[in-house]
Image 1 (cartoon, rainbow, N blue to C red):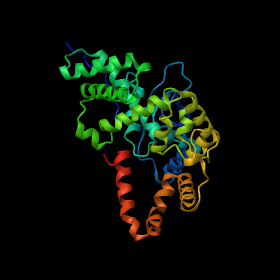
Image 2 (cartoon, rainbow, N blue to C red):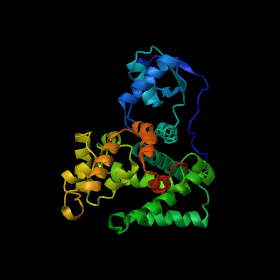
Image 3 (spheres, rainbow, N blue to C red):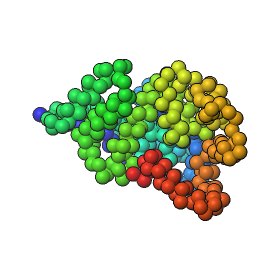
Image 4 (tube, one colour):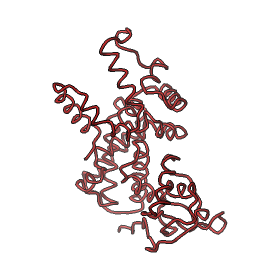
Amino acid sequence: MATAAKKVVEPTGVVMALSPSEILIGDRLGAFHPDKAQALGQLMAEDGQIVPIIVRASGPRAAAPWTLIAGHHRLEGARMVGLAIIDAIAVENGADALQIEAMENAARPSRSPLERASFVRAIADAAEARLKEQHGDLSPEQIAIRARWDAMKATAPGVERDVDLVDAEADHTRVNFTRVYGWRDEVAKAIGMSIESVKKDLALYRALIAPFPDLWRGLATHPAVGENASALRDIAAIGDLGDRQALIESLIATPDMTLAQAMDGLDLSKPAGGAAPTGATKFMNNTTSNLVRLSAGDQARIAPEIVKAMKPSALLALRAALDARIAEEGIGE
């Protein structure tokens, strides 16, 4: 007989006005962006707070009466601009704090690829834990998927094709999501958590977060690489763990460095043929190097100018390249 699933969140339904100084901040899943917090604080000061943060009551010996569950940037932003109060909703102490934070952040369109990977991994882990608390029959297909994942996980160090492990883990996670959260493919796809996107997230987690728990947040906030999913996948594809770590450390130490520059500096990539680029290739390299230095917002603002500068005969090629990149990134899935 199945045991009752643990309640994930039990909000009071009452929005409280708390002093930011009354709220503790513990370990967080995601990276912290001071500029984002400052911007949110300024917006709350000017226009009011739209979305309450989520808190729970602290223990009797805690330094403050409340502990933050979700809304780190909003809370820090309120502190930065000196807001006296912040709106908050409390959840029961038995609620799964990490899952609440993960679920709130995984659905945000502004997340960086590595932050999203961290949140999706947390949701998958929470589903795994909750499924173990339950008893009930899995279908033969689900049993097969779980068995495949267990077998692949047991031999992970010797797996020749990492894509096999990625596929097995994604299938296993999908089973857990279906059993615990009532996963439906069409709903998951609508909120950007299709099985394809989850597979990419878990692969990034395994390659860039799990091996480097003290480095990945610095990589996630790197101006040129942190929001570039293709660049992150290129780093993840580096087979040697030491080379991967050296590359990440080099990028973190030099925020204005591009991935290509960092790889060249570590002799991880060389120009084709070893010859210096000339002519059109040199112009193209300079253009792409300058583009990756811009933030996603700046790139979006100059996109119309880039299109306008293209020669008419090249527009169809540009559209085809954009369609292929959009499909590769899973945007709009």
